[in-house]
Length: 382
Image 1 (cartoon, rainbow, N blue to C red):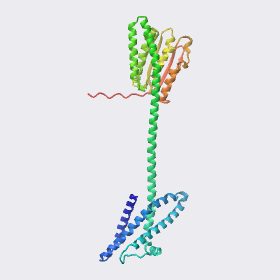
Image 2: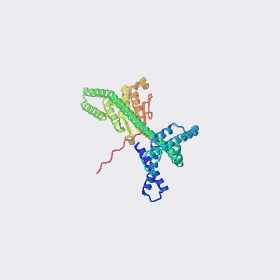
Image 3: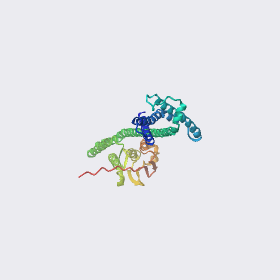
Image 4: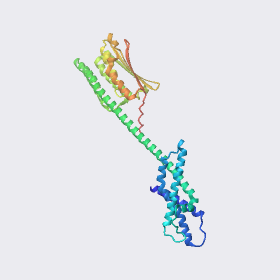
């Protein structure tokens, strides 16, 4: 309310100065001149302050009287009617307040009826009409500004809520990925550890103590690497291939000449980010469903290439011999299902995971992922 009063006070002061400038007082009587100036100032300031009291009412009339489309003529008529009523009230109250002031002649104003008041002040009614419609326009601008501010405030709130929702969604996705990774590691560790320890035990039984010590060292190295990656949802492809190599070296101690393996990755692919332990279940399946069921030596091959800004990783193995070589993809179910679900949560639908049994040639698992390069660390300062 205080800003509104200040605005109308400023309007009243402007009207008073303008009126005094256009109605100069002539004569040498100082008292007459003072009273005349006082009347001019009172007349305009009273007008402004009375309209200040009516401003909330004019604002409410603007909101309630429709003045758009087919309602425009009716709205104009209603506003003219309210303008006349409020204008009459301002003129009467201003005149009657002056009449109540104890002023000497000739500046005292007798208490007159409304007809005499309008006869004396009617020529100046145009100012009050302008003030009414000016207040009406000010109310429109104020409401428009308020609506715009409210829209912007709601937009900011919605964006904040959306940001919080997105953050919660990302946190939930990260928590799910971490839980899956933890479950996968819990499933993986006993598998490879059991197989590796069996290989070590077999080496000890036949007196191959040197190889047994080497196998234990590699088991320790792989365990240390996996523990070091705990909590990391993604690793470099170079690290992931390192896990695979160590795992295959341990399995080779077990199968000896029955297992051969190769890992061939293009240099530009080594810096790509992939989910941690993405390839481990697939390599384990290649051993379990391929090499372990063969009588003759077999190969496990891991290849990584970059094609059209997509990372392509292929894990293939010589399949089991005989009828087992036509094994369906369901025999690899747990590992591939878990891997597919992890990729779905990491990449959405922007990936491919294909499984194919090419009996008797090979069993092939093919990954196609977005190529996401990890930024290089800053160079050390000399």
